[in-house]
Image (cartoon, rainbow, N blue to C red):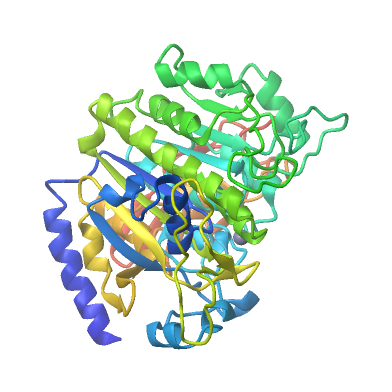
Length: 512
Ligand SMILES: [Zn+2]
């Protein structure tokens, strides 16, 4: 352990020095939720007849990544063992992470329990990459093909003990003043086919917050359900300051549309909905309104769901839309002369479906068989759940070689690999860390509770009101007594990590 720590600190010094010249102005993280090597192989075989042929084949940094979580709770695994994996077929299925824990690791640099959003193993909030970007005066956004308050986007911008708190997550996203773009699905008034329904389903967002987005004139959000509007934003014909696109559909852009697909794209996709590529380019075009740079997370969220259902045709559809989004964003950045200043990371949060070639068993692993372009490859799902398999990791752009220093473990098949928590650790190395105030329970208006996302574990906390320390307010959470503090009180927090001090920006609680 001591040797590992020593190497890490030496590398940290080396890279903080070299990163000086080439810190990225913008960072985009693409996440194929539930995507793995064999899912990419199948997609490439179907689309082009050979592998690797996706937009990722051209990325200069190609590594693998482990995804195990921080604990053995909820079927978790606390390590990845290369030898055990490749000699025992069931090893990879025995313990696995899920999107909350892996998203938290990717977004904060801290591994945690399954189901937990933005908190460490002790339940303390940890700062995420959206908060890091905002502390640097940058803009930030999230884009997904599944409900916007689902686990992966949630992990990048919110903090709550369980991913099931979707209405709390939605409020943190909408009211915390951290995000400038939200684009996704989870529309309460539509079904999975995109048909209007008679009674709203307020599972992903509560009805009061939805009313606020639709009708409140003080809302800073440009809220739209229109594909035309998104396309106008892509071309620059319209450019709102803060964009919220909620596609008129329930759970996914296309993966959960009715009927079963035999081959990809055999069942038409609802043309009223923006594609992931359109949402992503619109997001970049809104975020780059400001010259200080941005952070953007783009998720192919239904890749995971197609894998859970063992639907290979729809898996290939979802990966195709993910590839299209990468291609479109790279082309847009090149066209607007932003590609050289943007670090692009493409990875997954975990594999799902344990997809292999036919006759995989014991210590014999086969890859999917190529049946030529336009023909379904031969591949078998060996599970309906996640696995502990290594997943692919790609990066390009300024400072992308920082990931070589983290990829200090080697797999006998996949080669050098890093672990998921090292993505945010690398970004924090490049952009710095931060402490940030958020509302712990934004659905509770009678007893508002502020909390602070910490830049380190074992932090010391001091709360301030209007710049003055509040005596004995040293806990992570601070309950605002509304009889003592007027609505315009500016709260802030001083966080001490060892000898380093962090100050949050001021936060005024919004009384509605
Ligand atoms: Zn899943």
